[in-house]
Image (cartoon, rainbow, N blue to C red; front, side, top):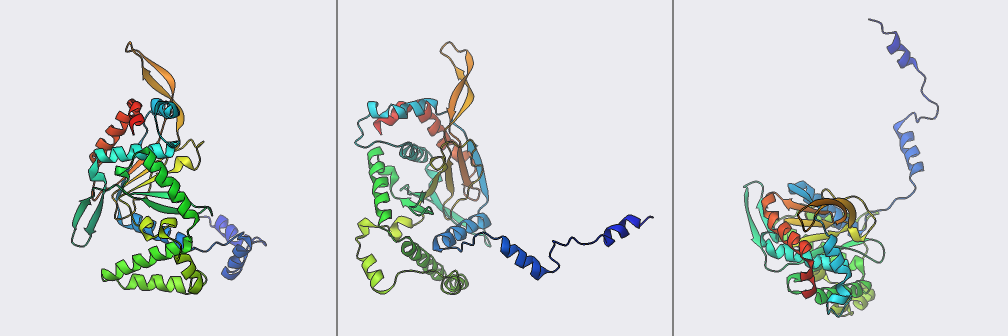
Amino acid sequence: MDFTATRQVAAFPRRADLPATKKEAQAEYKKRVTRTTRFGIQRKIVSHMTTESWRNIPHVTYLYEPDVTDFFEAFRQMGVQSNHRNKVTLNTLMLRTIVEGIKAAPHLNGHIKYDHASTKGKIETLENIDVSMPWILPNGEMMTINLHNCERRNLDDLSDYIGDMSRRINNTDLNEVMYDVSYDNMMGLLKRGKIAEPLRKVFGAKVGKGKVKHLKGDAKKEYESIDTRDRLTLFDLQPGTVTISNVGSIYREQRGAIGILEIIPPQIFAIAVGGVQERAGVVTKEDGSKEIAVRKVLPICLALDHRALDFGDAVPFMKKLDEIFARPEVIYGW
């Protein structure tokens, strides 16, 4: 066996521009870092909840791509065909549409309680449809807001609710309300007899460069003097019964689709709505013949907690949306 090549490689001189030691490599890496952003309280909460989701929940996802050509045209004609006191946005209309789908599949609207060690579990189906909706804040960060009792609200009510939520967000100290969320979460863990995790969270919030800052003294009193009807409170950030993420509103010109998304415990169902896209589709004409035409398609990702639900549980939801998209004139009565 000829070891000449091996010896040649071993003897090949090290490049002069490569660091010789681990310490030098770390120093070189630091030189190349353009910015360091430490987690604030909002990012800490998001990272904790999403980690818990992927650690504990067996996800099943499905990419549902309905033809919304007629539905989109009905939306464009809404100002003429309906008597709404507000201009209805596509975001609000999709929220109302999804709520109708959940009404047709109420078993999707619930919370799970499950113990992995004993395999004991139960699903609590809820009457109220409280939508957890990620919301882009004035500072560019994102916070999940709870829109309560959407099952009772028509399009005007939803438009008013969303508009008022925007007003209240502008009056809110976001760090302060997120601090309340974190504190409430820790107290919940303590009540369940879990001590180690809250202690670690307190240490992370109070010690080091990543410690959480919140209002104190007169500044806190002044902030708390703002009427709770004019700012967000813990009530507005509590976990809802289902999460709806409208990623299409962030970048309308997108041409992709979300293939997977996290379910936030204890919820068992989550939805991500993409952007309306034009695609070639098959159209059946009045005489029964078919042709290829340009159609509008809306990618919607559905995520199910497989401990609580099977794929068939989402079928009534999709059938209801199919029904609305096929006969969109129903939206004029919402």
